[in-house]
Image 1 (cartoon, helix red, strand yellow):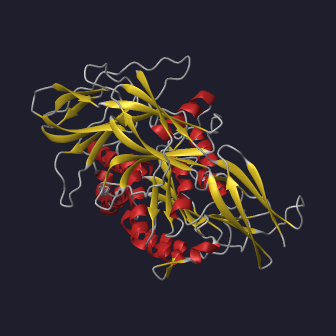
Image 2: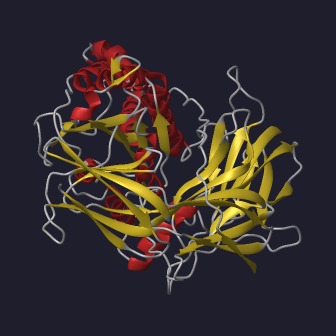
Image 3: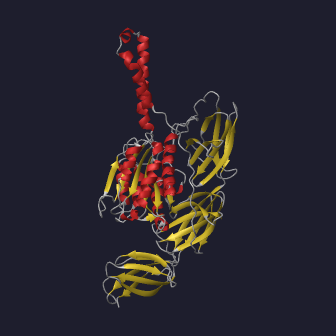
Length: 585
């Protein structure tokens, strides 16, 4: 793959459009428990009658098989239910209001409504933090273990949550994961929060660690606040590290939709192991068992895949399993073989592909039903005659085509993705490379909607990772630090090539302290506001020695202590770190 190099220097911040998530409503499951109970109800009078003792061996054998089949169905029901655990933020800030309603009240109502359709159809746990103490980073409680959802009881538990204390998100993620340790198959942790961890935890590191231990875990995040959406985007790494979704909700309706999207997605993850209308071929590269990953190399590969979707690599010293032949087709089905190319005339892609088969026509609500998912690079499918939509995803590159299957006419379909790779890095004005932990990239489409917003393709990406994208123009926003050191520009990804773009940042680290005299000790319990010369607030923080990364330019800083304000002007020079003292006068 050829490589193209670009440098990005132009700087401006853009507004972000919301990412719409399209999910199919899960199909209702038949209750095998009810079936089993019905069987017992009808045979009980006969078992205790004189006719039972006179029954022949053949009939008794049939009766035994009927009872055992019903019992097996009961056991299977629990194993096939989707698994998820919800974490609810009950910190003090949840008493804040949106549209005149306390956020915690909106949580009570939204989740209470959402869980009703899933009653007895999934296993759902509940964890809350900050609901028992006015402060304390160990205030985390499992209100409900992972068990079959009783919607009525779950609603009461959620409604009992009253905000009081802190926000120990990292610890809550670890606690929620313990409730999923015995789960086989996919599992989801859904975090609903209106703030960041204030207990010195690192939720992103915890998410990365959990993903390395449990390969089938994903964490979805719903950021529920109207005023702090920009700040809450830092939680997107929790989702990206595990292959989950990050959704913003600025009102009760959006909160309800976001929670529903997450639970619907868990149904899809669970149902693809046994599709309703298409027989899925055995997976050769992905395990569906909740097992710890022990190899350091495997941990690194899993982390890269979660962020970029880059192709899966085979473990060192382990040969990739040979491709299994397709199973004989069912009656009235036709065999379809799928393969994908990066560019026209290229070689078939050998790994890292995800194929999704959808119904060929929408339902009454305009949605296409997901029939099956396959991770073989070249799957052989047995499909009934008809029309289908087939989606091939390779990282963030994808292609959806309509496929028509005719009776008794086996055929192969080739998807040309027309994709390339993008690798981003950042350097400072002095040529020093920016630390990977200090910079993140958000990639947007080049097109804008009627409101001037771009579609967000990927958020929270880190330097030096190859991101697979469809060929085209993309808008890249690079954020250095937590303030206004932001650079954005357009980058062109060419088919079959690796584009390497270097972002030149002009920011520098600035440390502030309030002192009684020049060179004195920093005064604790100080609040800080960093502003432009025009008075626009850029960053607010608290502490004796806060440090922020600011873009080059002129600023005012306001320090507040014991009800008094102290102000100073200062300049930031590109690539030159500095200490700014504000003297009490």
